[in-house]
Length: 589
Image 1: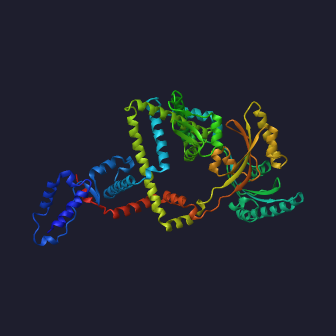
Image 2: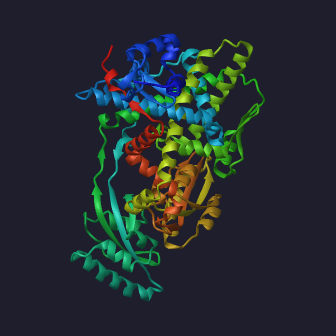
Image 3: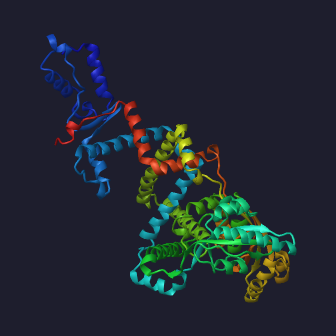
């Protein structure tokens, strides 16, 4: 083998560029000695034509243009694997390659992350700040406050016994309707006859949804007459009675409700039952754990004097700001930090599907606000303590950094994969077309509600409102007149999606989106108020073109094909970086 000066320089240059090259481990003289001996002395004669591979140490599992993955790297990655992933099964080589690929992908992503400004965008700054407050306050609860979370079986059982009524699953029915309006009393007979004929067609086997789509004058015709899954008492009395008298798969006779005539169809009945303890045990456990945490936060924060300038509005004012304030309204301030309503809305949306909004958590929005406020008080207290003694809370800084770096890398990878999919238009077009029913606009409802402040006369007010529902449904009295008669106020909530309505009144969501236009709810308690609402208008969901839901299509595609996308991304990165495995070293010791 005959290598000229240029070839020697190229070989050494490649070694020197490697992060964990033999030059760093063994030193240049030993490398050169090994190279000479491996060639059998100075190259001569026909050896010049012999192909030679790159020089690879026994502990190198893979190499690429700017680095190597060694046995030590593999061992560290293996130690972090969950127990279930530590067994190679029957394919040790393939299992090892997958772990090595993961190490390579993490390195490439970390390098790109370090060179980007990904961490500095406002959303990441907000997430980082929130995580820091959570890590610090959790540390304080355990280390300083002595909080040891845990729920015993007898506590769960006692909670179940004390709340058995809340574990009664009511009978519900999936209901469709077909509605026509009557212009006069004389016109009712004609409309009822038309609907009776349609009811007969359903009884003879025709599809109710297709008939509703063709003949109904309600907006629900766009969803084939679907009202929703209803509990008894949701619909106006006449409609409610007709619906809950229907067998599964049966259609009603024509039913008059105000100036309209309806047919109702019961597609499915789920009978009521009492949920057994074992079925609701996980939910109860999460509720009690959350309650313990929030009580500990409130107790710890209550013992602290807030050293910075601060403003914590009264409870009623906070509720008013949450419901009516704009995004820049400050819900509280400590020092230079202001917690604004817009940010709180993001907290609420982030918690929609977590323990903060479990059915058994009373008034979850206010409870979440108190949790955030108490965490901020504890965090500021910890900062003040650390300012006086720098050694205090050093370990919690390390905990925070580790969690943040892991979360940041995960977010960066998600962003990278989203951009990878977003650059492939043909994938998006096909996925949008195949899942068009998922990419629709949110249904919306417009509500007006009567609000009465809770006071000594509240039982009488509640009784008056309940008694007036029949007159409201019949149009004999308006919501404004009823408010005037009971000393209440009327609010127009405007158009709201389910998520927006949950933020304003979580009790109203299920009922409001299952009621027809013109229907009125039963009166109910909401914090320190009595509420009764009217459904003024509704908008059904509508399909949205790809350009209007591009981000949602990308997110949904990744949810279903993340591993496939990640594998393609890693494959392209391996090719771009000249990645190669060295399986001959996998089993060497």
